View: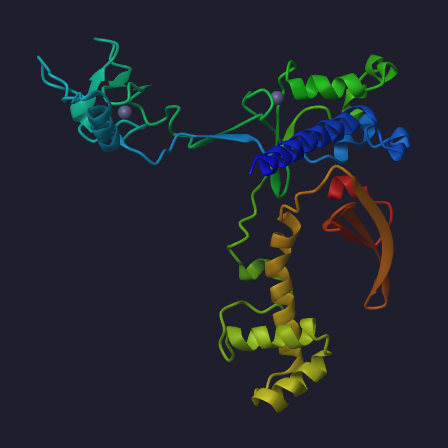
Length: 334
Ligand SMILES: [Zn+2]
Ligand SMILES: [Zn+2]
């Protein structure tokens, strides 16, 4: 029995040594290719995806009743409604915006001025007007310095929020990487992306509006066929790679469904449009190394350029763009 314990002990020791050596290698011995790696250059900062902002949400899932029973259990104390000498003039409909406590637990916090109410249950102070700090349900904060993000640009599909704090560690860290020469020029900093940026997309992917669908795409309100037929069309045409006309024939021969090849094409288009936003905005958990490539495809006989940005490790396609010319700045479009 002793020998087993002894061996186990040795295994543990060896394992710890391994861990130590591994950490040492990671920290101090750069792999050969890293020596020539310029992907750490600040010029490529634009391609780096910032992490998500912190979100402050005032709407919590507990309310005053939960708090009352918590106090009772934890401290054996019961919070009683406020004892009033004079009649309460807080409107009856008023409740605590943080814990939803009724008027019984609310009192004026600033005496005769009557501009601030205090909640006896959760000790929150708030103004009785509707437009208080609780009326905004969420606030975006920089994950590095917790400053509130400022909406800077209102683009067609998204709002660009930026952390404008000059002491933000993220900004200072990026600033260190920039060439000293560049810093002296006017507007030179604009060449680089130094601040933390978050894009808030405003497209509601779940609201499919017929008006925004391109020509020939069908809506998902089925008249003649149903979702099953649509999925059969997609399976045969996309998964099995049959042509539109062969799909039509297969549906007719196998399932006795007579559908035109045009309708199949329309279904595919609709499916593509429904899926596109999910594919485009899916979080592929990109690594730090990404590769990009350009190629061209023919769409109805016309040459079009196609760009891809891929994660170097997982090979998932992080972004793509099709254009009829090569002059478009890819980075801005992606
Ligand atoms: Zn409250
Ligand atoms: Zn910041």
